[in-house]
Length: 312
Image 1: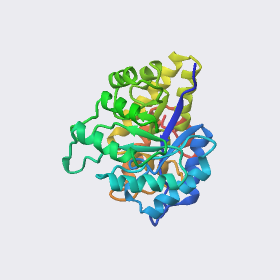
Image 2 (image 1 turned 180 degrees about the vertical axis):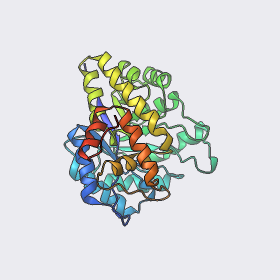
Image 3 (image 1 turned 90 degrees about the vertical axis):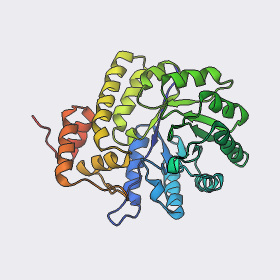
C-alpha cells in the first residue's frame, strides 16, 4: 500500500505589533515537519497572505523553504487574484522563494464574478503558457461556479507541469469522475471531509488548514490508514470531524480558530491580522472548555503543557 501524504496550508505567526514573528513562525513550521506534514506557504486563508506585502510574502517563502525543503514537501499557495497578470506576479514570488510546487486557483470570485467554462479555461491557458514550474490546480467552488472534472482533466492533459490537484471543496463524486477522466498519473489530494472514502478510492493524501491545529492527530489518522487499520483510522477520523464541527462556530476561514487555539494553549505568534479580530476573553474561555470536552488526546496534551485543567 502506498504511503499517503499530509499537506498543510500553514498558518503564519505574527508579533503583537503585527509584524511577522520569525521565531514563532519557525516553531509552527517545525511542528509540522516533526509530524512529516508538507506545507503550502503563504496561504490566502490559513496563512493570511492576503494581508501581506510582497516583501513579507518573500520572507515567508524564504523562511519556509529554509525550514522545510528537503524534509517535507515545501510548496507555495499564493492568494487568488482576478487577473492573469496579478496571478503571475504572485506565482513568481513563490518560485523565486524556492518552493517546489505552486498552487493555482482560478480567477477570484470577487463582486459575485462567476466565470464561464471558457473564461476559466482561458485563464489557465494564458497562465500556464508562462509558468513552466510544477503547479497544482485548485478547482475550488466560488460564487455559484465550480469547474467540472472534465475541464480540470483537460488542463492536466494539456499541461505536463500540472503536478497535483487539490480537491479542497469537492467531494467523492467529483474525485471519482476526475480520476476516471485522467489519462496520466496526477496526484489527487482530498479534504478532511470525505477523505476516508477518497483515500480508499486512491487519493494520494489529505490537504487542508486543519492540520495547523492538530498535526499529531492527523498524522495518527493517516498512519493508521497506511497500516491497514481502517477501523481505528475511522475512529480518529470521527474525532477530527467532531473537532471540525465544533470550531465551525468560529471559522468563517481558518485564521480565527487557528489563532484562538494558539492563544489559549499559549503558543507564540497567536496574533491575527485584520479584518480578523481575536474574540474577548470570556468567549475564548468558552471555546477552550468546548475543546477540552472533545476528549481528543492531542488537545489534552496541549492543555496540560499550557497548565489548563480539563473539566471533570
